[in-house]
Image: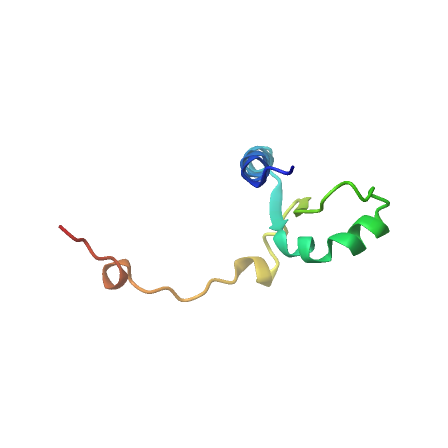
Length: 83
């Protein structure tokens, strides 16, 4: 049986290690919705389950898409302290 928590923990450390080596990453969870198609295209046996894809490479920091920033609410407007 697949242990999703273990997968998540392993992937999180892989992402951190990649970043430490100057690589950019993008986990792709939606790929699991197409697991059968991906397995067939990559000749992965049926007893394996596709749960995550991972894009890995060097970021183009000059690309406009990599510099896009959404507007954000001021932290004081959305943070509340309860006692």
